[in-house]
Amino acid sequence: MSIHRDPWDGMPMTTGGNVTGDLQSHFAGFNVQAMPFIPNVNAQPFVPVGTSGGGEHQHPQAYYEHGMGLPPGLYPNQQNVNRMTPSEEGEVDSWEDIASDEPKSVPSTSDVITSSEVLGQPSSETTISDSTAIVSNEPLSSSPNNQEETYTSSDIRGAQAMEKSNSDSQLKTKASNSNQTSPSSTPLPKAKLVVAAPQRSEADKENVNIVFIGHVDAGKSTIGGHIMYLTGQVDKRTLEKYEREAKEKNRETWYLSWALDTNLEEREKGKTVETGRAFFDTEKKRYTILDAPGHAGFVSNMISGAAQGDIGILVISARKGEFETGFERRGQTREHAMLVKIAGVRHLVVLINKMDDPTVKWSEERYEECKTKLTPFLKTVGFNPKTDIYYIPVSGLAGTNLKYDVDSSVCPWFEGSPFIKYLDDFPSIPRDDGGPLKIPIVDKYKDMGTMVIGIIQSGTVTRGQQLVVLPNKTPVEVLSVIRSEEEVHAGYSGDNIKLKLKGVEEEDVSQGFVLCEPSVVCHTGKLFDAQIIILEHKSIICAGYSAVIHIHTAVEEVQIVSLIGLYDKKTGKRIPGRPRFVKQDQVVVARLETTGVICLETFNDFPRMARFILRDEGKTIAIGKVLKLM
Image: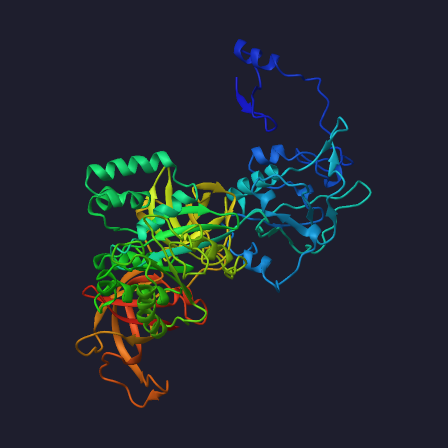
């Protein structure tokens, strides 16, 4: 018996002899009477699950579960759709493009999906459109049981999340109905998913960042703690607990400062080491208190606090001898006023504290003496005495003239507003909600994820937004936005916020890093030209001189590579020739190089990230601004 294989099915066949039992059992299962297969050339085109004939959308669930992205029926007659995916940088309009006064392309109301809908927030209406059709008021299709099926905002968010795995694939539409054949025409233009920038609600109060500065023991933390108590942020029971603990340590007058000085070391020594942060509200505004350290050894921490401030609160002591100590050449009153001006603070409120001290007794003469000595110096720093400075006599320990008007029997000569009322009546500070997002990082810690703290210098940040951490260029996702210790949907320009980030470890983030949108990032570099004013230095400064640069919240070592030109301080004109050295009170344009890569901008583009301070051996030696990036 010889065996060969049938070319049709590959089963072994016999040419002679008896068939074995095993072979018979195999053949018994075949239906030899079956009809031959004849293709149906008139059959309807194949339609994937989730769509009905004609390409109309039926239900998106199958697409989401299998990672197939948005169903083709969602955007009729379109070959490709520009979607918000983390891997496709630059395809989604930034907040600047959407919210600016003159956008590149102004979409109609029906062409916009609001960010609240994309991020899963409730919305009264969701509208999706393309260049040829608008699908909004009518149902997209009907299900077999004649019930309407519509897209929800969570469906859109789910589609975007699943699209990450196959963002490079393209979905092609089918024929709209059986009467039309599938044309092989040129592809239609892309339909762009436009996300409107979240707008401030009318109930959302303006946030004002106030930074307390001044010489050590002037009463900055005490005033801040009393404000927290007067505005209801610290209850009476907690304050009584602080008072008992302070008496046990023979520090009876320190208990109010403990509302801000939460560190055990700060409480024991009575000195603020790091910039404290607290929040309080009034009927008109929200406030962030930034309590900067006053000791000369912690000026570096004070600078990072000043970089976040909108209004500077200079606290001085009216007590005999204390004002003079703080205001003399080595006192911190002078240095803090200068540093806060360089950091970008334009307005200064001077609180003349301890007016109830036995050496003062609310004396008008002492108040005027302090005012007369301070005003000329503040004018040289750059503050206009008529428009930028406001003096208020207060008592931080007693709370006098902080929230309520001082009694005329105590201080009959002062007729101005108390401190909090003056802040409430202060004109609104201009903000740039529609600008490119820039969040310099002040601090970071780990709490069920990577947490960063910073102030939004421009732009708007929302929960679920894709950002990048510079200068490392690490892509991250915002998991939550926390403002005033409460989680919110979005943070706006000027808000002091905490962000929980996904995609980066806490040790990979440092102070001075900046969060930006992937499509509009800030500049990074090491080499730049800058204008420098030498404030105080005993000897000459030549090329090769090294110092520490403080620019926004970043701190880095820097070296002067070369001196480009010297300028006359009075006329502002350049002196011919290249200088070989520069000395105190001179203005020079120099080329600087930092040890590591930092985030920075030119002064013309973004002043807040262009001003800097040079310090060496614990002293401020120069101030400057970035002119050109190399």
